[in-house]
Image 1 (cartoon, rainbow, N blue to C red):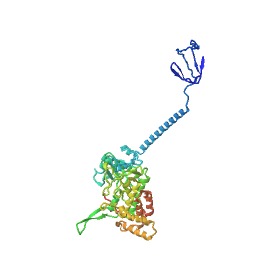
Image 2 (cartoon, rainbow, N blue to C red):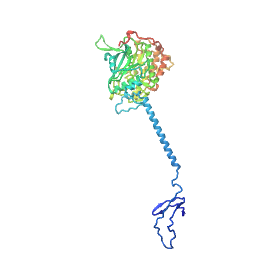
Image 3 (cartoon, helix red, strand yellow):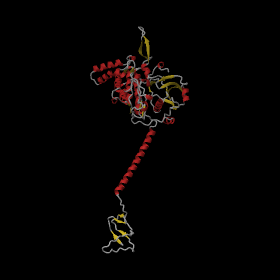
Image 4 (cartoon, rainbow, N blue to C red):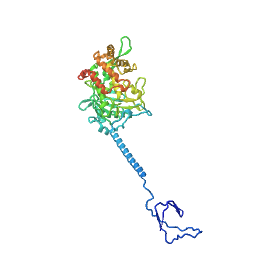
Length: 492
């Protein structure tokens, strides 16, 4: 038995073998001769010598670096899997949480196919199933069948109002309670508006917002059942129907102006402004999900038997977030909104729409504040927000006056302040016959000037509006117990 210690490769029968530095035992059969050859001769070994290697250790060594790398890869894989799992659970939760909270932006945007449309934090669209409304809706809002709707309206016998996309019928609810049923015109887009309005109304609980009593979603033409508001709208009370008269001098017909059977008192005008601000504060700040009405105007402000404000028409409201970016609308020559393809409309009405929104397409709560400021100007002046005959906006007519008031508010010159007060008094609705408080007029006009400010960031919030009205308009408290005489109430 011989022991060889060799660290370099050697070859047996054409095969290269690598020996390790560790001594290796080699066994040679006894029959094999290993005597050295005679001098000067050449010996060729033709027989194969069996060789047995018995390694004392494995030729593969343990590498700490490889183990560390594998551990890092495994840890990273587990962490990535956990992150994916958590994100999946979060997405599932958000979908369930916002299932009945649609973003109205897409439904009211004016962008046709191909227009750029981006929404900030837009939740998932609502589930339009009947079960969704039954689960998420107000327990006091009853679900009617279409046959019941027909019966309540006497087969739609008496229509008491209409708009571009809906009709309103007088209804006789159980218990001889009067109601108003709004029927939406059938189309894919308007069906989405109906679902959107229903989803919002089911969540609202406020004294100055019209109450939803029930609904029907069995037909393409959805129905909403509301409480009946007897005194019509603020639009009717401020502006009424214009009467065409014939002069004695010639046969030329002229419009005399707004003919009203009675005049809305100053104290009630201030109370309506205060109550409208309360409704906006509720929508903007106190709802579980912030809501932007998007179409504040006198025709959407109903008055009950005691002239309390009831905000209605949430078909163009946005729910879920306070702002969104949309394609600006295209205004026609008369200042009206242009209907684009697929009947996608932008929010607001001529004279009440925020110019900043028209320029940028950015919709937010400050759009409602701007519209509120225009309504306050109407309450003071009795003028309409947009004059179709002259093509004039009320904000343009009142612009110089509002700027002058802003200048004299901080002025120490009593003469200038008195002059401004005289100018303000001249702008008050002449139908009031001087029955108003000049200080309150100045306060309300100053507040209106802030609400219609050029930059949305300069406009007050609904809460700030309420605080200002409470501190500066004493007439609000005296209007709470005043109501119209019965003969002045709307007979419809």
